Length: 227
Ligand code: C5J
Image (cartoon, rainbow, N blue to C red; front, side, top):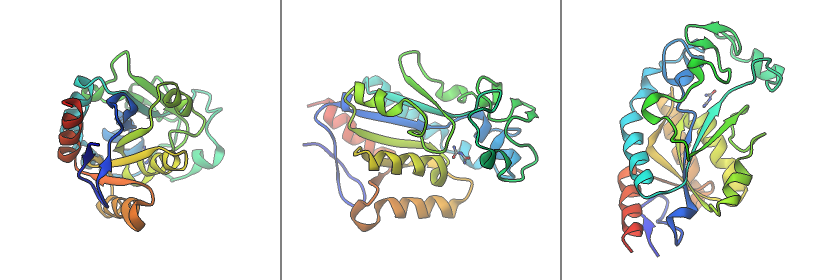
């Protein structure tokens, strides 16, 4: 058995790398660039850009090992039929969901600002899950897509740590997936919230799962690949 050095204790990898998915949550221009949804809510979007090189390195390794890659995008239909009124009016930002902004309509599928950033753009054979909520399982085909491919373990990355990343990890944990949050491949607009999320995940003997840095993750993946 190969394990990743993780907290609160080593994370046992599955027998085959095909059972381990890399999940990249919402690395979209809407959250990382000025003029998008995150910016409209008054956040310092530059904070999130800091993880891009590290996440890109992890993605490159996972691709080279032919692991399943899953990207998610938070987005809504142009007619907003999938956006609950409560979500639409929340936040009191400069722009709300659906309003025209410098990168097109805020958080609307297909708009330039809704795209995944070019550095992490999905390859054609990778799974892309558009999602109307914060969690990636809510009103999406993610559960079926993972089951179809026999994926049992998930490495969870992306933004923002305490919102869509944590919600997705909790949803996955409740569905029986063994989840590890990659600490240096996730970021929040609020450093204290990121720290608290990492602690919450691994508290009580790993009540939601595990956390580890990408270096430890990549060492474990390489070891499994070389068996
Ligand atoms: C937010 C997200 N923060 N991707 N979305 O609204 O975390």
